[in-house]
Image (cartoon, rainbow, N blue to C red; front, side, top):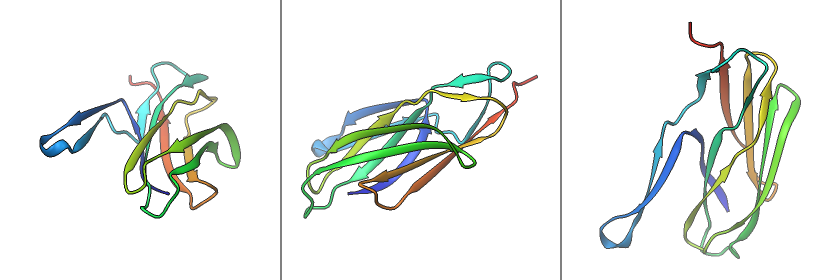
Length: 128
């Protein structure tokens, strides 16, 4: 299996279209945001990871996502993936991350110890 995309989002909706195809509507894709209050601030983002399963794969794997600021690991999530061969799947990851200062956290995503897809998110000071 391979990761097609990983994004921080506000919302996600699934819908069927003509011919039985499925659409995933991603709303509020973001790579930074202003904190609603001064730090320390605990953030619980929605990270969606889109994964493709090749036809010759068994359809079962593990998704690991770790969250880092610099070399420090702040959170880790491991969950099973079960995707029909030849199809796509999506997983939501909802960590709880406490920012001690305004900085960038990296979500490092991988399937079965494979290549890593890194998605940054920068927490900015509250808007004036």
